[in-house]
Length: 408
Image (cartoon, rainbow, N blue to C red; front, top):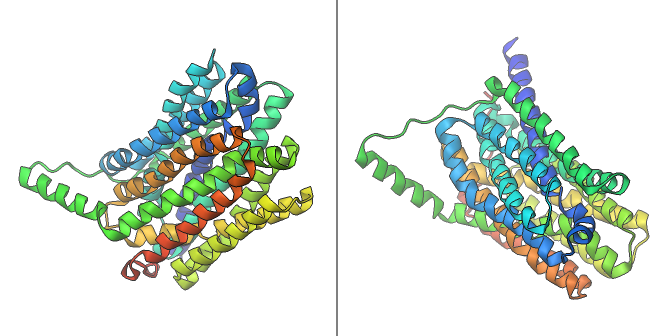
């Protein structure tokens, strides 16, 4: 009688701590974009130059993430997760103290290094500790944590900058990062994953390297990588630049325009919760992804071509967010089904680096569109990229789509 409650209590603790830490990762994705109007005035730069800072952030994160995946599997996930949160904290402090635009770039490098740890560390912890029959719901809570971080950042950063200063807003972000670092350190005994000993025999090392290259070059893993790249290109463009696009296109006040991101993110959180239950119950991961992304793209086109009053604007974007959020647990289950035992850090680190690749490419393109007066082009661009992700998800070989394992 006591085994199940103990297992459930363990699952709740692990999922709660990891989901909250993941919220910190996504919070720091959107620490800088809401401050762009203040940073542009303070340093006399363009949106394109500020977008370069975000490109550096995501480029460093993407290039580091696969290597961090190996580190997670080698030394354990909890200590790597705490180190990443500490890097985010220090990066925010560096931006707060920046004397000129050039100082934002090394800070972006440190922020990118901090961001690189979350997906390999988080998924290694969840796969190691959580009961398999609850895995899709664990993934959904993990995603919801990140989504709430995205929802909080724009309002907190913009309001803090408006009421006090942009430097104060960044110090506040650093305090949040510090609190999350301490939370993970205090929970380390419940989160840590076993490290893997390094092979000492040369033949064994060659065999392991060959198996790893074959895994990364397999069709399911490469398609998952492409899917993540395209999804991030559209999804993070919405989060970072949609308020500016609405402001430039329709003259939407920045307070209302920034609020649309909160509506989108809260909708995404609700959709993710439902999507986790759908994925655990049905196992139809590709169908869930295709339906959600197609309808979300339609909502974004409506927003870009139909002037809407604030209430309707918030409503349509909340629906768009819910539809996209519905797909994320199914997405993560697709990756899990293709991951060999003991390789969670490596595979999730490699595949999720596609998110950073997509986020690296889009900011410069969108910044150029806004600087050139083509704000409306933002919406069909994002909708088109969103639709392309469906092709990659539905092309993943069906043999990799499996039902979650039975309860322990």
